[in-house]
Image 1 (cartoon, rainbow, N blue to C red):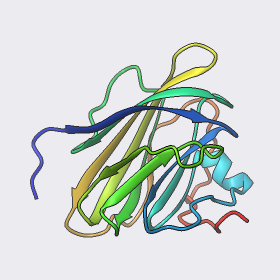
Image 2: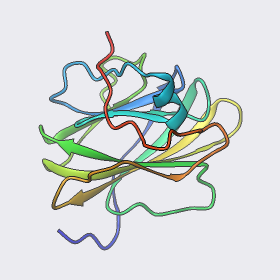
Image 3: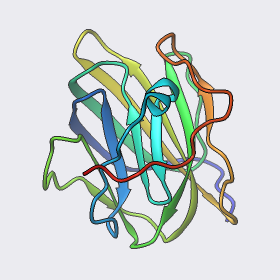
Length: 166
């Protein structure tokens, strides 16, 4: 499937906390991730159909724009991370760790994607987050930090898996 431009699927506002937010397939019953120091240093924790991204701020609100298509770089992005992501159920959710039944879901064709989270802070308690789902014919093998802010200190080899949170 060739995508020439991005198409916005959803714009929403989330409340992030514990310096993170989650993106997960509806088929995942327990999307929380048991972050380690290594995950915190690299800014994300992930499983096949779950991505938990570290935020620039500890808590606050974020304006989120979710698109299907290639990541579009912008000079304002302070942290950009790409991870493999598998859509199984055809519905994906985005929420903060303390939000329940937030109702922020969107339809996405089952398959493999390169999920890019691009963030920048707007003041002391607000962020802007762009989520880009690029369809792939085969699963992406490795995550990548495309833009690193000063808070990241990733290990030489990125940690590609995490245990579910209790």
